[in-house]
Length: 555
Image 1 (cartoon, one colour):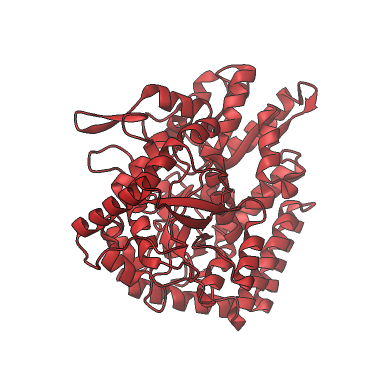
Image 2 (cartoon, helix red, strand yellow):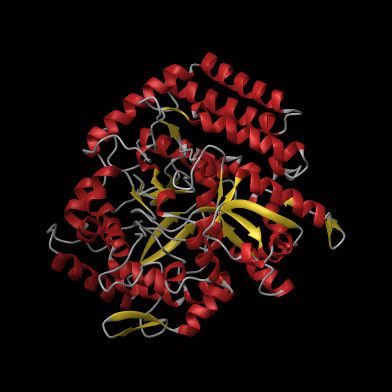
């Protein structure tokens, strides 16, 4: 994924779940004696609990890109405070995230803990400016649960200098479906019949998909007096990246045994020609370039948009509204479309990063890094995971036959209105260091999406396949630092890409689309693309050597 893609995903995930979290300390709190034993750390936590009971609560300041929580008073917050002796105080993380982070960096006014998009240049800027402290020694001494939970992945968070400056959120490989083609089910039944609409396992070919959009437009030129839209996408945040999986394209092209820009993948040219066809034939939303997620959500919630391509979980909220408006069949459901020249086994819809979406980092403004690490260790522990993702034992879940068992009314409440339930209970509000997978008792850490998956997820599971999954952590962070000559080339190349994507898609003819594609490649090479690819290949091979693995291939 490109930088702005990852940034938008993080914002959607965290904001949609009302997720605000953090770690660190702004004052001297109780410390361990320096031993690595879990008993010592547990003893420290007991001391912090006593301190909290005596009113000796320490404050942790946190910046999180997902927004802010004004109060720290819900049941989960109270449990966190009781178990750690820490109260979390939030710096407003909503709105222009990178602008705020840059202002804090320039003024050195950042809080104890910052959450940084791992693919953003701001992440590198904070590290290069010396704003982040190294965590390796702290983890070794005060992070036994971090070491256990991250395991062999911990080495992959090391920077080129061998130090760890942040730990990932939503780490370890998640096999769950990611990007899907989502089609409004009630309308699809009218166009192709219920039997085909119910067959999520059988992909649509590219030609079938285009014909499907045409048939929809012919059958439903307007819906409720509004001109219908066969397909709309979030162009402002995602550009056309959501279509990469349809053609088996990944972040970088490795067909020539080196790292090259994805536009060099022969299938990329095929992809933009398909999108250009959709645009020229009036099937693509004419406003796609300027749409952000909020605008796209408004369009698909009003019921006159037939199809979109995006992360399947973002349809949850619109689907809730659509079902209320038009019944259980009025929602968006997941399907796979296979591009020409690609088999169903070669699609790459499910791009996942084992290192997560972003990093939790302790800054040099933190007055007590040891206490901050102790807090982070609890939040990263299995107990911390279940507390932040499931809620409070006895109130939101129980142990039944040695396993976590959610209270049905709590789960129903969250699925009915996740924002209101999260605000009331604290569930999913303070999550951090989230590990994909299951706990020791076999129950999933992420209760909401993994426990008895909703119908939205069930359709996605049917449409997706194991072959769609690939780990893009191998390709993350290969671009040179922005302050280097090669970093400037990378920015120029990215700007050229942003400039030409809408030119290719919105071209007046197929010939013009191809001409724009060739002009894009030419301008990228003039800007220094070959030199950039050489640097990224060098960085890639060095990264594989640090990790101790062979160069990765998604196919």
